[in-house]
Amino acid sequence: MKLNNIIDRIKLPFRKEKELFSSLYEILGFYPRNIEYYKMALMHKSIRKRNDKGKPLNNERLEFLGDAILDAAVGYIVYRHYEGKREGFLTNTRSKLVSRETLGKLATEMRLSNLLISAGHSTSHNSYVEGNAFEALVGAIYLDRGYEACLWFFEKQVLGKYIDIDKVAFKEVNFKSKLLEWSQKNRVRLEYKLTKQKKDENGSPVFTYMVLIEGVSGESGSGYSKKEAQQKASKETLQRLKREPQFVDAVFAAKTARTQMEEEPAMAVPNTEQEQNFIIEQETAADTKIEENENKVPTIDFTDKEFDLSDISHKEKSREEIIAEAEAAAFSED
Image 1 (spheres, rainbow, N blue to C red):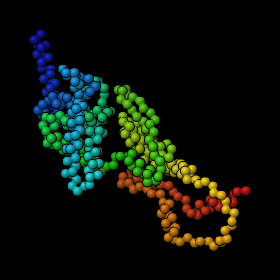
Image 2 (image 1 turned 90 degrees about the vertical axis):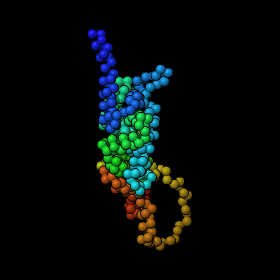
Image 3 (image 1 turned 60 degrees about the vertical axis):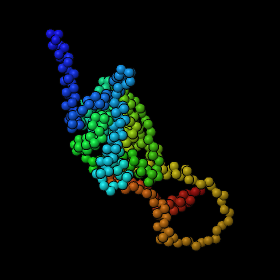
Image 4 (image 1 turned 180 degrees about the horizontal axis):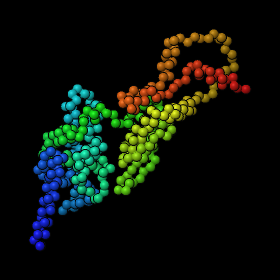
């Protein structure tokens, strides 16, 4: 009986090792040579494990290495895939492909997150933890099989199965950038206000931000990072600008009130001499066109129709309306 127990204890580690090899093969497309690298890649720092010398054992160093290798490999893939494209486009595409959000989703889809070893905290919501593990995995591949294997892994196992590189490259996902550009074109003030900060049941921080345009409250968004929260708030605010004309009117009314206060001139001393000029100067068509161009509020042309705000801008009053209001105000005085 005792002998059987000893044999079972010996078989158990080998069984787990075999299961790990099998799971990694499904993710990598090849069997690891040195399994220890991959074990380290799957160790989250929360387990607080140390070696014989007292140094921590976790995936942070492999994450650092994998981050650098991933940038180089994905940069090369994008460079080769989009021949003739400019540097800005290539940089933006690479950034989308290696973002924490993208890598976190990849880790989930590839079931890498199921192999993570942590201190019992759920990481299903946290793309940072899973994205870091993905980078650590790339670092393990590099140490185990070299750069070419990392390049093959991302190109064949990732892009070939989980990501459409063209959809990623040409889809605009930076809603904060869209909203910022629209606000600059229309000369309205935009800010993000942190309205709430708390921790969820696992102790992870949760941030809530609200968009303010000219002090008018927009929409709010929550996320496990400030960037994620601001992106969600920006997206909801863009949708509201598109569907609620009253919101747009409130924004530009607030802008008008602010600019009037900032630009209101000091009252000059009245002139006692009466001007004897009774000739009405005629305004030429060219003068009218120049004035219209000067007063025109720029708008922004978006390629994404869902968030196209090009038709949402401040409606300037016509010259006739301004003159009529001025005359009405003058004659209403006692």
